[in-house]
Length: 206
Image 1 (tube, rainbow, N blue to C red):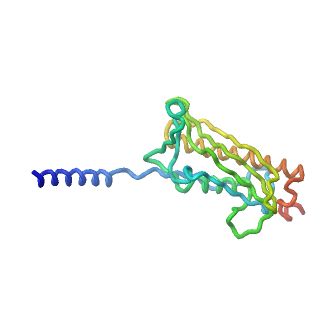
Image 2: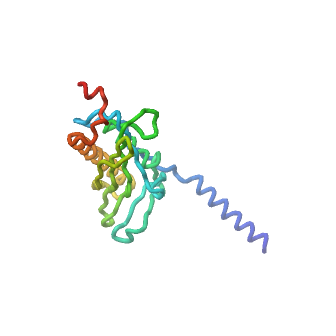
Image 3: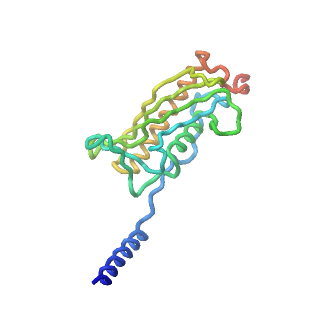
């Protein structure tokens, strides 16, 4: 009887392993092809960008929340994932559009634009309606690491579908909208004289 039970368990494990091997590969998403600088954006060669993400968002999982069911529960799609950590993908996209450098690079910079991400997920208001939501806090730091400007950011875009693909596209659009907001904010801060040293000398001479 014992041998029969062991054989039965072995068969179950083999079936599970076989099923896992037959599982389709996960759909992998990123932010798409590199994009051009936004129109009317400055040459911020002396400004670095840093995106800080809570550890629970610092994974490859594509997260979503069901606001109509349990908004405190963070869920993730089983068959889909990001190509890289969302914070890194967002930072790359913003650098391309705003024209700033990475905070971990070798280029010497005078100022820092820090984005502390608090929410980056697809939220469902109803089973058939969802949106990509991006929330956080943006701060400007001068060469002495003093905060010279702060603002809250909250951007959302409707999702065309109630799946991972719809959520990803909505989050990418929200990220692009955020880039526009940050670029306008930087230009406004420069007009106020807050970031006088963050423009490149090349841009100032033109």
